[in-house]
Length: 89
Image (tube, rainbow, N blue to C red; front, side, top):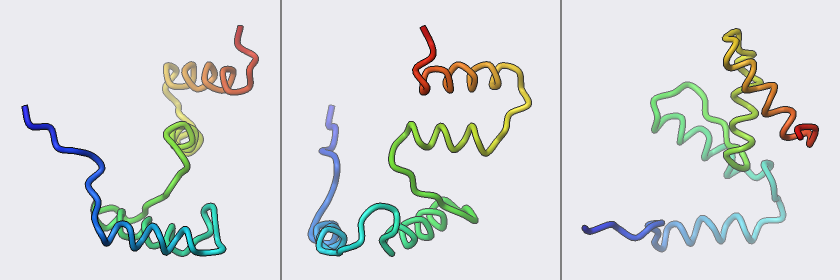
């Protein structure tokens, strides 16, 4: 089975990475973040794109944004909040 190496990168990716690393702006405040959000949204044919730190943060954002009405999702959200706050036994 021929599984390709990942991640696939080249000179352009190194150039973009160097641009960010040599900048004095870190976190979500670098102009590259807004550019990535716009371009990724366009690639996905979406109106908006939103970058996040990791999968946990994206899950928290999704749960917060939906304010779910479905009882199963509310129960999951309650358990997740307990887990994150360290109150779950």
